[in-house]
Length: 508
Image 1 (tube, rainbow, N blue to C red):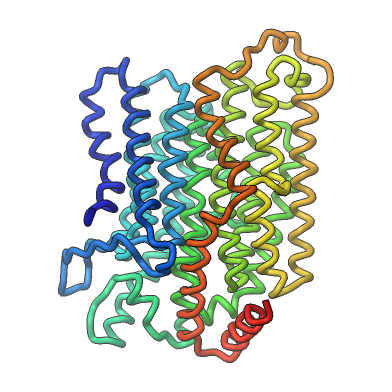
Image 2 (image 1 turned 90 degrees about the horizontal axis):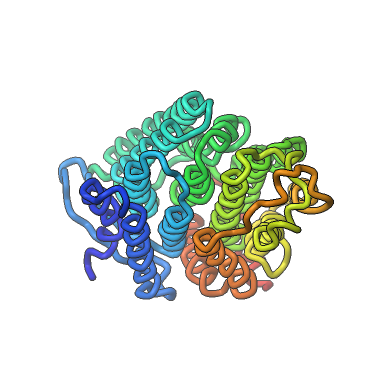
C-alpha cells in the first residue's frame, strides 16, 4: 500500500469531519470504532515494517513548492514507528475510558483531530510539514483543557499555549536559517530532514542552531526550568487530556532531540552533553522531591512524569546506542504507565470528586481490582524488573554510565526517590482502615474501565519480560543514526566520543 502512511495520518481527521453527522447518543461508539481502526492501520505498519532495514520506510514524496524544496514527504524508521503505535493505541484507550458527559461529540472530534497531528509529527520527513503538525497539535489540546478542564482551566490552557508557542517560535528561527544554510552550501532549497542530517555545518553555526532547536524541544518535554506549565495543565485538564498529554505530546520534545538535535548537530550535542545532563539530573531529583511533598494524587503523577522525562533526556544525550535506544523505549513505557496512572486517578475522581490522598485510605478493601491494577502500574513506574519501566530506565542509565558514572549515580537517586513517593501514595490511599465513611460503598472498576486498563497491564508485563520485538527495530535505526553522526562530526571531542563508543561496542 503506497499511501498507507497518509491513510494512517489523515483517517482520524476525515472520520472527525464525518463525526459531526453522527447522533450524540452514538458518538462514543463511533469514536471507539474510528480509533480502533486507526490502531489496526498502525499495526499494519508494524507488520509490514522491515526490521533489518534501518532507513526510512513507507516513503511518500510529492512536490508541493519545488523551487523552495517544500514537499509532502513522509517516512518512518524504527525511531518513529513505535511512537506512532503509542499515539494510536493510547488514543483508542483514552476514548474507551472516556467519562465526559458534557458536549461529548465535540470532545471525540477534537481527540480525532489531535490524533492526526500526533501521527503527523512522527511521520513527517519535510520540516515544514513537521512544523505544521507540531503547531496544529497545540490547538486541540488547548481546547480540551480550556473547554473541559477544572476551575483554573483558562489559566492553565493559556500558560500551556504561551510556553509551547514561544518554544515553537525559537525553533522556527532555526528552521528558516537551516533552509538558508542548505541553499548557501548546496545551491538548492530543501526542507527534507534527510538532506539536513547529511549537510555539513561548521561547529560555531551548530552551536547556535542547536540552541534554537533545543529550547523548542526542551519546553515541550518539559525540562527544568521550563516545566511550570505542565503541573497546571495536568491539574486542570480532564482525565483524557492528561492521558494524551503525558502519553504522547511530551514525547514530541524528546523525539525532536533524536530526530533533529543529535543527527543534525552532532558536535554541538557532544559539546552540550554536560550542561544538558546537569539539567536532566536536576529535573529527575528536584521534581521527585516536589512529588514527595504533594497531597494531590494527580500532582504526584504529574511531577513524577517530569522526573521520568529527565531520565529519557539523559539517555538521549548519552550519544550511544544503549542510551538512545533505552530513552526511546522509555518514551513508550512512560507513555503507557503514566497514561494508565492518570486514567486510574480519573477513575477515583469520578467516584469521589477529590484527588487528595487524605480523603482516602483502605481503598484496597473496597476496590480490590482497582488497587491491583494501580499497584502493577506503580511497580512499572518505579522501574521494577520484569515490568516495562525497568527496561528503558536500565538501558538509559547504562548508556550514560559510559559517559559519566558519577552523574549516572546522581540520576539513580531520583529513581530511589520515585519509589519513595509512589509507595507513600499507595500506602496512604490503599492500605490501613477506611478513614472516610463515604468510601465504604465505592464501586470497583466497571467493565468499561477494565476494557481500557487491562490492555495496558498486558503491555506492562509483556514488554517487561520480552522487549525484543520493540528494541530490535529501534536499535537498528539508532545505530544507523550514530554511524551518520560520526561521519558528520568535525570536532576532536565528538570524534573521540564516537571512537570511545565504537571501542565499547567492539569490546562487547
